[in-house]
Amino acid sequence: MLGNDDWWRDAVVYQVYPRSFADSDGDGVGDLEGVRGRLPYLARLGVDAIWLSPFYTSPMADGGYDVADYRDVDPMFGSLGDFDALVADAHEAGIRVIADLVPNHSSDRHPWFQAGLRDRYIFRDRPNDWESIFGGPAWTQVEDGQWYLHLFAPEQPDLNWENPEVRAEFRDILRFWLDRGVDGFRIDVAHGMVKAAGLPDVGAKDGRQAEMLGGEQVPYFDQDGVHDIYREWRPILDSYPGGRMAVAEAWVSSPERLARYIGPDELHQAFNFDFMLADFHAKSFRTVIEKSLKEAETVGAPTTWVLSNHDKPRHVTRHGGPARARAATLLMLALPGSAYLYNGEELGLPEVLDLPDELRQDPAFLRRGDSRDGCRVPIPWTRSAGMGWTDPWLPIPASWAALSAQAQEDDPGSTLNLYRAALRIRKEHPALGGGTLTWLDSPEDVLAIERDPGLVVVVNTGEEPVRPDVTGEVLLSSGPLPGDGSVPPDTTVWLQRSTVG
Image 1: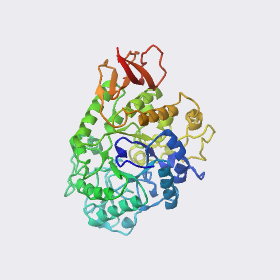
Image 2: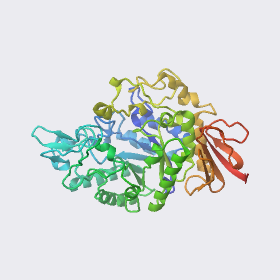
Image 3: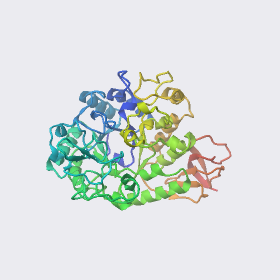
């Protein structure tokens, strides 16, 4: 059921944050059996693949991105047998499985760190001025006076990729999971791993160093040597059948730098975060789309589109409400390339902004007061008080009963059924998925795009209804239409062109 080695070029991938997706054993934490039990839901939604955020053995200092054993499943999520059963059932359902790989750092509970194998980490006698992304210094001192580097939490020591044993270990880790049937990897902090020779100071005078990541190169990210690692990995991926792939989470200083990660001898894709960070306005969206498609053309690989993930506020809240979120979603799903969805966005879930401080677990909150916990609240399955969970690890707002999968199932106007319809049309319509787009003339607050053959997408980000210069059958709209041929504010429409007015 899984043909087509180029499946990833126009795939819709659904990110599963395992703790918050579905709980099979009633302990309040989602698990792999929970994911497996919801595969029919995901198949009906219409996704091509699932990306599993880390499920490895971990003390959970950073939600599983602190890995203590890269070849096993943490007991809170199940077992390797559960993972194998999930992959087998997903493949039977026509859904591929992407695993999250965390190569920049391990947990401080990893056997290497516990055994004092310092040559596999980055230790030095004196710290430099580097700062942690989570706030505070990026160095922690151990009992004998040396310091180790952790660009994230102190429980996440950075690995030393100058050590050939580290490189060999990760090549073996790739093969371990590929042998178990994974279809690809999302590479966490793909721009990390290699540090500038001599670990020079950044010397930032104004603001935090982490805020410089988008505009300037820093000596701990996006070093040229990281590409040697991916050139070692690509032949491994290519040696397995079925179109195994890798997508980079890479925050770099320019499109030209990002393009270097993608190609026939490195990675297949890189996340396009600019679309996620765009404002809800036609000009902002168009600027990002044009830039992203130009970059994709440069590297010969389709771009990716993302609106929400486990690190950023959900786009219902970020864009100012469900109507705008639905409109942005239909725009995203009409663009050429692949789309990545985040679990619960198909239910129209907002960011939870009022979690009690004592329940927050994000190390970024503990170190600098910023929290990503609000987008990680377990998703509601039922209308019942527990919403399908027993004592969930983060509390689910009572108002989410109306947003639960059960509540939305039979409502033709629900966000869940909008996503189902959009993904069905995306699969069936020859204009959607891969290909190119053409910009049509439109007012300043409106985007009008044509996908050949004959699919026109109109997005109204303004304050007044607009009447498109196109007539045709409405295939789908993100909100109610008045029936006079106009598109209301905060609405996207997919039209099958008939004639030009």
